[in-house]
Image (cartoon, rainbow, N blue to C red; front, side, top):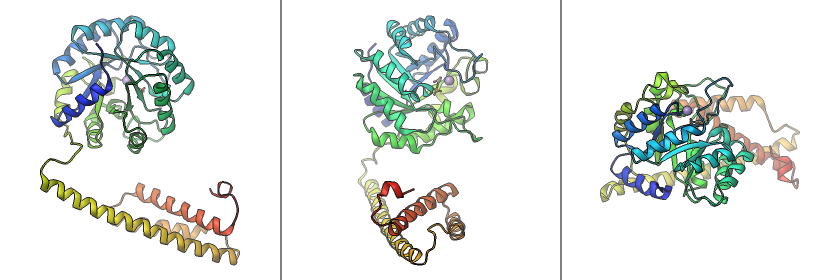
Length: 373
Ligand code: PEP
Ligand code: MN
Protein backbone atom coordinates (compact mmCIF):
# COMPACT_ATOMS: atom_id res chain seq x y z
CA UNK A 1 0.00 0.00 0.00
CA UNK A 2 1.84 3.08 -1.21
CA UNK A 3 0.75 6.36 0.22
CA UNK A 4 2.37 9.77 0.29
CA UNK A 5 1.68 12.93 2.18
CA UNK A 6 0.98 14.85 -1.00
CA UNK A 7 -1.80 12.33 -1.59
CA UNK A 8 -2.82 12.71 2.06
CA UNK A 9 -2.77 16.50 1.86
CA UNK A 10 -4.85 16.53 -1.30
CA UNK A 11 -7.25 14.13 0.40
CA UNK A 12 -7.28 16.10 3.66
CA UNK A 13 -8.05 19.37 1.79
CA UNK A 14 -10.95 17.67 0.04
CA UNK A 15 -12.15 16.21 3.35
CA UNK A 16 -11.91 19.62 4.99
CA UNK A 17 -14.18 21.07 2.33
CA UNK A 18 -16.60 18.31 3.28
CA UNK A 19 -16.24 19.28 6.94
CA UNK A 20 -14.22 16.20 7.95
CA UNK A 21 -10.70 16.19 9.43
CA UNK A 22 -8.02 13.78 8.23
CA UNK A 23 -7.53 11.26 11.03
CA UNK A 24 -4.67 9.01 12.15
CA UNK A 25 -5.70 6.78 15.05
CA UNK A 26 -4.67 3.66 16.91
CA UNK A 27 -3.40 2.52 20.26
CA UNK A 28 -0.56 4.18 22.14
CA UNK A 29 1.08 0.73 22.19
CA UNK A 30 0.50 -2.53 20.41
CA UNK A 31 -0.11 -4.91 23.34
CA UNK A 32 -1.45 -8.17 21.93
CA UNK A 33 -2.35 -9.39 18.46
CA UNK A 34 -6.03 -9.42 19.47
CA UNK A 35 -5.93 -5.84 20.80
CA UNK A 36 -4.27 -4.60 17.60
CA UNK A 37 -6.70 -6.43 15.36
CA UNK A 38 -9.75 -5.36 17.38
CA UNK A 39 -8.65 -1.71 17.40
CA UNK A 40 -8.02 -1.64 13.64
CA UNK A 41 -11.31 -3.40 12.97
CA UNK A 42 -13.28 -0.90 15.07
CA UNK A 43 -11.41 2.09 13.63
CA UNK A 44 -11.99 0.89 10.07
CA UNK A 45 -15.70 0.59 10.89
CA UNK A 46 -15.90 4.28 11.88
CA UNK A 47 -15.04 5.27 8.31
CA UNK A 48 -13.06 8.27 9.57
CA UNK A 49 -9.56 6.84 9.94
CA UNK A 50 -7.08 6.99 7.05
CA UNK A 51 -3.91 5.79 8.78
CA UNK A 52 -3.40 3.49 11.76
CA UNK A 53 -0.77 4.24 14.41
CA UNK A 54 0.69 1.97 17.10
CA UNK A 55 3.79 2.15 19.28
CA UNK A 56 5.96 -0.96 19.01
CA UNK A 57 9.04 0.31 20.88
CA UNK A 58 7.94 2.65 23.65
CA UNK A 59 10.25 5.42 24.85
CA UNK A 60 9.23 5.54 28.51
CA UNK A 61 10.31 8.42 30.69
CA UNK A 62 10.87 6.18 33.75
CA UNK A 63 12.29 2.62 33.69
CA UNK A 64 10.26 -0.42 34.76
CA UNK A 65 7.29 0.66 32.64
CA UNK A 66 5.99 -1.31 29.67
CA UNK A 67 8.49 -0.75 26.86
CA UNK A 68 6.57 -2.15 23.92
CA UNK A 69 6.22 -5.61 22.38
CA UNK A 70 8.95 -5.06 19.79
CA UNK A 71 9.39 -6.76 16.44
CA UNK A 72 6.56 -9.37 16.52
CA UNK A 73 4.04 -6.55 16.97
CA UNK A 74 5.09 -5.06 13.60
CA UNK A 75 3.59 -8.12 11.93
CA UNK A 76 0.34 -8.00 13.97
CA UNK A 77 -0.06 -4.40 12.89
CA UNK A 78 0.74 -4.98 9.22
CA UNK A 79 -1.59 -7.98 9.11
CA UNK A 80 -4.47 -5.98 10.64
CA UNK A 81 -3.80 -3.11 8.23
CA UNK A 82 -3.97 -5.45 5.24
CA UNK A 83 -7.09 -7.13 6.57
CA UNK A 84 -8.96 -3.83 6.92
CA UNK A 85 -7.30 -2.08 4.00
CA UNK A 86 -5.59 0.67 5.99
CA UNK A 87 -1.94 1.81 5.93
CA UNK A 88 -0.08 1.53 9.23
CA UNK A 89 2.52 3.69 11.01
CA UNK A 90 5.00 3.01 13.83
CA UNK A 91 7.51 5.08 15.80
CA UNK A 92 11.20 4.50 15.09
CA UNK A 93 14.00 5.70 17.34
CA UNK A 94 17.13 4.14 15.82
CA UNK A 95 18.51 2.46 12.70
CA UNK A 96 17.55 -1.05 13.76
CA UNK A 97 13.91 0.02 14.28
CA UNK A 98 13.91 1.44 10.75
CA UNK A 99 15.36 -1.76 9.36
CA UNK A 100 12.79 -3.95 11.13
CA UNK A 101 9.87 -1.69 10.18
CA UNK A 102 10.92 -1.67 6.52
CA UNK A 103 11.31 -5.45 6.57
CA UNK A 104 7.76 -5.78 7.94
CA UNK A 105 6.53 -3.45 5.15
CA UNK A 106 5.15 -0.84 7.53
CA UNK A 107 3.70 1.98 5.39
CA UNK A 108 4.65 5.11 7.34
CA UNK A 109 7.22 5.86 10.09
CA UNK A 110 7.26 8.56 12.71
CA UNK A 111 10.03 10.01 14.84
CA UNK A 112 8.95 10.55 18.45
CA UNK A 113 9.39 13.66 20.57
CA UNK A 114 12.18 12.13 22.67
CA UNK A 115 14.13 11.30 19.51
CA UNK A 116 13.64 14.61 17.65
CA UNK A 117 15.62 16.31 20.43
CA UNK A 118 18.75 14.34 19.57
CA UNK A 119 20.42 15.19 16.22
CA UNK A 120 22.65 12.07 16.50
CA UNK A 121 19.59 9.81 16.67
CA UNK A 122 17.75 11.70 13.94
CA UNK A 123 20.80 11.49 11.67
CA UNK A 124 21.13 7.76 12.38
CA UNK A 125 17.49 7.29 11.36
CA UNK A 126 17.94 9.50 8.29
CA UNK A 127 20.97 7.44 7.21
CA UNK A 128 19.00 4.23 7.64
CA UNK A 129 16.18 5.71 5.54
CA UNK A 130 18.42 6.76 2.72
CA UNK A 131 17.60 4.92 -0.50
CA UNK A 132 13.98 4.34 0.58
CA UNK A 133 11.10 6.74 0.13
CA UNK A 134 8.79 5.75 2.94
CA UNK A 135 6.66 8.64 4.29
CA UNK A 136 7.97 9.97 7.62
CA UNK A 137 6.20 12.07 10.27
CA UNK A 138 8.30 14.10 12.67
CA UNK A 139 6.96 14.97 16.10
CA UNK A 140 8.08 18.18 17.74
CA UNK A 141 10.93 17.76 20.26
CA UNK A 142 9.92 17.54 23.94
CA UNK A 143 11.46 20.96 24.57
CA UNK A 144 10.11 24.08 22.85
CA UNK A 145 12.95 24.40 20.34
CA UNK A 146 11.75 25.19 16.83
CA UNK A 147 15.25 24.83 15.34
CA UNK A 148 15.55 21.21 16.53
CA UNK A 149 12.22 20.40 14.92
CA UNK A 150 13.20 22.07 11.66
CA UNK A 151 16.65 20.47 11.83
CA UNK A 152 15.15 16.98 12.17
CA UNK A 153 12.92 17.69 9.18
CA UNK A 154 15.92 18.79 7.12
CA UNK A 155 17.93 15.69 8.07
CA UNK A 156 15.09 13.42 6.95
CA UNK A 157 14.59 15.37 3.73
CA UNK A 158 18.31 15.41 3.01
CA UNK A 159 18.24 11.61 3.18
CA UNK A 160 15.98 11.72 0.11
CA UNK A 161 12.62 11.26 1.85
CA UNK A 162 10.16 13.30 -0.18
CA UNK A 163 7.03 12.60 1.80
CA UNK A 164 7.39 14.29 5.18
CA UNK A 165 4.84 15.59 7.68
CA UNK A 166 5.12 17.23 11.09
CA UNK A 167 3.19 16.31 14.22
CA UNK A 168 2.53 18.85 16.95
CA UNK A 169 2.31 16.99 20.30
CA UNK A 170 3.08 19.79 22.73
CA UNK A 171 6.09 20.60 24.92
CA UNK A 172 7.20 19.43 28.37
CA UNK A 173 7.05 21.95 31.13
CA UNK A 174 7.99 21.92 34.78
CA UNK A 175 4.97 24.07 35.56
CA UNK A 176 1.80 22.45 36.70
CA UNK A 177 -0.69 22.86 33.88
CA UNK A 178 -4.00 21.53 32.69
CA UNK A 179 -2.09 20.00 29.76
CA UNK A 180 0.28 17.06 29.88
CA UNK A 181 2.37 18.88 27.28
CA UNK A 182 1.92 22.62 26.72
CA UNK A 183 0.61 23.25 23.18
CA UNK A 184 2.54 26.54 22.68
CA UNK A 185 0.62 27.02 19.42
CA UNK A 186 3.02 29.72 18.27
CA UNK A 187 5.71 27.05 17.69
CA UNK A 188 3.81 24.93 15.12
CA UNK A 189 2.72 28.20 13.51
CA UNK A 190 6.38 29.29 13.23
CA UNK A 191 7.24 25.83 11.84
CA UNK A 192 4.63 26.23 9.12
CA UNK A 193 5.99 29.65 8.24
CA UNK A 194 9.47 28.16 7.87
CA UNK A 195 8.30 25.04 6.01
CA UNK A 196 5.01 25.92 4.32
CA UNK A 197 5.03 22.82 2.11
CA UNK A 198 5.06 20.35 5.02
CA UNK A 199 1.67 19.25 6.31
CA UNK A 200 1.09 19.66 10.04
CA UNK A 201 -0.98 17.21 12.06
CA UNK A 202 -1.92 17.69 15.70
CA UNK A 203 -1.73 14.98 18.36
CA UNK A 204 -4.28 16.22 20.91
CA UNK A 205 -3.86 13.00 22.94
CA UNK A 206 -0.30 13.73 24.06
CA UNK A 207 -1.02 17.45 24.51
CA UNK A 208 -4.04 16.70 26.71
CA UNK A 209 -2.87 13.72 28.73
CA UNK A 210 -6.52 13.12 29.65
CA UNK A 211 -9.36 12.21 27.37
CA UNK A 212 -11.70 15.00 28.57
CA UNK A 213 -9.48 17.64 27.00
CA UNK A 214 -8.96 16.06 23.57
CA UNK A 215 -11.95 17.63 21.80
CA UNK A 216 -10.96 21.12 22.91
CA UNK A 217 -7.37 20.76 21.75
CA UNK A 218 -8.47 19.13 18.48
CA UNK A 219 -10.80 22.08 17.85
CA UNK A 220 -7.92 24.54 18.40
CA UNK A 221 -5.86 22.59 15.87
CA UNK A 222 -8.69 22.74 13.34
CA UNK A 223 -9.15 26.47 14.01
CA UNK A 224 -5.49 26.96 13.14
CA UNK A 225 -5.92 25.08 9.87
CA UNK A 226 -3.85 21.98 10.73
CA UNK A 227 -4.15 19.21 8.17
CA UNK A 228 -5.33 16.48 10.50
CA UNK A 229 -5.31 14.75 13.87
CA UNK A 230 -3.49 11.82 15.47
CA UNK A 231 -5.66 10.38 18.24
CA UNK A 232 -4.81 7.47 20.54
CA UNK A 233 -7.55 4.86 20.69
CA UNK A 234 -7.87 1.57 22.58
CA UNK A 235 -10.73 -0.94 22.86
CA UNK A 236 -10.57 -0.66 26.70
CA UNK A 237 -8.63 2.53 27.41
CA UNK A 238 -8.56 2.24 31.20
CA UNK A 239 -6.81 -1.12 30.91
CA UNK A 240 -4.21 0.16 28.40
CA UNK A 241 -0.59 -0.70 29.18
CA UNK A 242 0.53 2.87 28.42
CA UNK A 243 -1.15 6.30 28.37
CA UNK A 244 -4.42 4.89 29.76
CA UNK A 245 -5.82 8.31 30.83
CA UNK A 246 -5.64 9.82 27.36
CA UNK A 247 -6.84 6.98 25.14
CA UNK A 248 -10.41 6.83 23.91
CA UNK A 249 -12.50 3.97 22.58
CA UNK A 250 -12.74 3.74 18.79
CA UNK A 251 -16.49 4.18 19.30
CA UNK A 252 -15.93 7.56 20.96
CA UNK A 253 -13.96 8.77 17.97
CA UNK A 254 -16.98 9.39 15.74
CA UNK A 255 -18.90 11.69 18.15
CA UNK A 256 -15.68 13.53 18.97
CA UNK A 257 -14.90 14.14 15.30
CA UNK A 258 -18.49 15.04 14.49
CA UNK A 259 -18.43 17.67 17.23
CA UNK A 260 -15.53 19.51 15.58
CA UNK A 261 -16.14 22.58 13.47
CA UNK A 262 -13.87 22.30 10.46
CA UNK A 263 -12.85 25.74 9.24
CA UNK A 264 -12.13 26.40 5.60
CA UNK A 265 -8.82 27.77 4.43
CA UNK A 266 -10.41 30.36 2.16
CA UNK A 267 -13.48 32.52 2.59
CA UNK A 268 -16.57 31.20 0.80
CA UNK A 269 -17.27 31.95 -2.85
CA UNK A 270 -19.96 34.47 -1.85
CA UNK A 271 -18.56 37.86 -3.00
CA UNK A 272 -20.28 39.79 -0.17
CA UNK A 273 -18.64 37.52 2.42
CA UNK A 274 -15.22 38.04 0.80
CA UNK A 275 -15.63 41.84 0.68
CA UNK A 276 -16.42 41.91 4.37
CA UNK A 277 -13.20 40.00 5.11
CA UNK A 278 -11.20 42.30 2.81
CA UNK A 279 -12.57 45.38 4.61
CA UNK A 280 -11.64 43.97 7.99
CA UNK A 281 -8.17 43.09 6.74
CA UNK A 282 -7.69 46.61 5.40
CA UNK A 283 -8.48 47.89 8.91
CA UNK A 284 -5.91 45.52 10.41
CA UNK A 285 -3.30 46.68 7.83
CA UNK A 286 -3.94 50.27 8.80
CA UNK A 287 -3.74 49.59 12.55
CA UNK A 288 -0.52 47.56 12.16
CA UNK A 289 1.08 50.42 10.23
CA UNK A 290 0.15 52.84 13.02
CA UNK A 291 1.48 50.45 15.70
CA UNK A 292 4.86 50.17 13.94
CA UNK A 293 5.05 53.97 13.45
CA UNK A 294 4.22 54.49 17.12
CA UNK A 295 6.83 51.98 18.27
CA UNK A 296 9.43 53.72 16.08
CA UNK A 297 8.40 57.08 17.61
CA UNK A 298 8.70 55.54 21.07
CA UNK A 299 12.25 54.39 20.26
CA UNK A 300 13.15 57.87 19.04
CA UNK A 301 12.14 59.22 22.47
CA UNK A 302 14.09 56.36 24.11
CA UNK A 303 17.21 57.46 22.22
CA UNK A 304 16.70 61.07 23.44
CA UNK A 305 16.42 59.67 26.98
CA UNK A 306 19.66 57.75 26.31
CA UNK A 307 21.41 61.03 25.41
CA UNK A 308 20.08 62.64 28.60
CA UNK A 309 21.14 59.70 30.80
CA UNK A 310 24.60 59.70 29.22
CA UNK A 311 25.06 63.43 29.82
CA UNK A 312 23.92 63.11 33.43
CA UNK A 313 25.76 59.87 34.18
CA UNK A 314 22.55 57.91 34.80
CA UNK A 315 22.17 54.14 34.29
CA UNK A 316 20.00 52.86 31.47
CA UNK A 317 17.93 50.59 33.67
CA UNK A 318 15.91 52.55 36.19
CA UNK A 319 14.17 49.78 38.08
CA UNK A 320 11.46 51.90 39.70
CA UNK A 321 10.47 53.50 36.42
CA UNK A 322 10.34 50.08 34.73
CA UNK A 323 8.16 48.70 37.52
CA UNK A 324 5.82 51.69 37.18
CA UNK A 325 5.58 51.18 33.40
CA UNK A 326 4.81 47.48 33.87
CA UNK A 327 2.13 48.20 36.48
CA UNK A 328 0.33 51.02 34.68
CA UNK A 329 0.44 49.54 31.16
CA UNK A 330 -0.62 46.13 32.41
CA UNK A 331 -3.55 47.54 34.31
CA UNK A 332 -4.70 49.56 31.26
CA UNK A 333 -4.29 46.56 28.95
CA UNK A 334 -6.19 44.26 31.32
CA UNK A 335 -9.08 46.73 31.41
CA UNK A 336 -9.11 46.62 27.60
CA UNK A 337 -9.37 42.82 27.58
CA UNK A 338 -5.77 42.02 26.65
CA UNK A 339 -4.31 38.96 28.38
CA UNK A 340 -1.78 39.31 31.18
CA UNK A 341 0.58 36.90 29.45
CA UNK A 342 0.52 38.93 26.24
CA UNK A 343 0.97 42.24 28.07
CA UNK A 344 3.99 40.92 29.97
CA UNK A 345 5.64 39.56 26.84
CA UNK A 346 4.85 42.71 24.84
CA UNK A 347 6.18 45.07 27.53
CA UNK A 348 9.35 43.01 27.95
CA UNK A 349 9.99 43.16 24.21
CA UNK A 350 9.38 46.93 24.08
CA UNK A 351 11.64 47.45 27.08
CA UNK A 352 14.44 45.33 25.68
CA UNK A 353 14.29 47.14 22.31
CA UNK A 354 14.33 50.45 24.15
CA UNK A 355 17.38 49.37 26.18
CA UNK A 356 19.11 48.32 22.94
CA UNK A 357 18.51 51.78 21.43
CA UNK A 358 19.77 53.55 24.56
CA UNK A 359 22.80 51.26 24.77
CA UNK A 360 23.72 52.21 21.22
CA UNK A 361 23.41 55.91 22.04
CA UNK A 362 25.61 55.47 25.12
CA UNK A 363 28.26 53.35 23.40
CA UNK A 364 28.60 54.72 19.88
CA UNK A 365 30.84 52.82 17.50
CA UNK A 366 30.85 49.58 19.51
CA UNK A 367 29.99 46.29 17.87
CA UNK A 368 26.29 45.63 18.37
CA UNK A 369 26.75 41.96 19.07
CA UNK A 370 28.98 42.82 22.02
CA UNK A 371 26.80 45.48 23.54
CA UNK A 372 23.26 44.27 23.03
CA UNK A 373 21.66 42.13 25.66
C1 PEP B 1 3.40 8.17 21.14
O1 PEP B 1 2.98 8.67 20.10
O2 PEP B 1 2.90 7.20 21.70
C2 PEP B 1 4.55 8.83 21.81
C3 PEP B 1 5.44 8.17 22.51
O3 PEP B 1 4.49 10.14 21.64
P1 PEP B 1 5.57 11.30 21.89
O4 PEP B 1 6.77 10.97 21.10
O5 PEP B 1 4.79 12.46 21.36
O6 PEP B 1 5.78 11.37 23.37
MN1 MN C 1 1.20 7.47 23.88
